[in-house]
Length: 271
Image 1 (cartoon, rainbow, N blue to C red):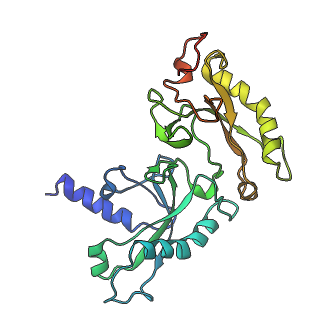
Image 2 (cartoon, one colour):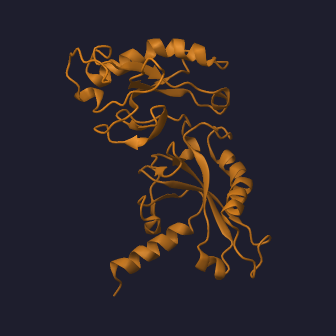
C-alpha cells in the first residue's frame, strides 16, 4: 500500500519529466513537492522544451558549476522561450524570464542529461518566484500585477518584493491600463505614455479606492511605462499605483491599503 510520501514522490518525478506546454507548481519553500497543474490554475513554471546536453557532457563528466548552468540555460533555453511566447519575441522587461529545471546530483550520476527549459516569473529581488495564471504561449507579456499587490520598500528608494499591504510598503497597485487604443501604431515615448496615464489612471484608482482623496492621504498616483523593447514584443499594459514620494526623492513607507484608509483625513507625512 502506497503512502502519501510515495505518491508525492511519484507525482514530483512525473512533473519533472513533463513535455512542452506543461505547467508546474510547487511551494516556494519546498520545490521537491513539484506537481503538474492545468495552466488555467496558478503555477510557478511552464515547460517550453526538454533539451539534451549529453553530447557536451558524456557519462563520466562532472556537472557544470552554477555559472556554467546559467550559461547553458541562456544558450539553450532563451531562443526556445522566445519562440514559445505569443509573437515570437521575449519582452526583456516583461513578466516572464527564462529558467530551467536541471538534473539533481543523483540524477546526473545516473546519466540524466536533460535540461527542462521553461518560463517563470521572478520577484524584483530575483530571490523567489511568483505564480502566474494562463499559458505563456498566448499571453500579453506586460509586467503588470493584480490590483491590491503591494511592494516592499528597500533602503527608502528601491522597490522590493510583494508584501502584505498591512506592512510598510513602497507602492500599491490599484489597477492596470491598456495603452494600445491610445497608441495603435508606433512606440510612444515614455513621456507620452506618462501624459496619457495621467488621464487613464485616476478613474482606475478611484474605482479601486472607493473615491479616496489621495492628496489628503499624502499619497500620489503613478504609473509604470514601457520600454521600446517591450513595445516591440507586444506589451501594451502598465500598472497604476499609489505611493508617497518625499521632497528629496526618497519614498516614504506606507502602511495599510489605500482601501482601508479613512474617506477623508488631513494626515501629513510622518517625520
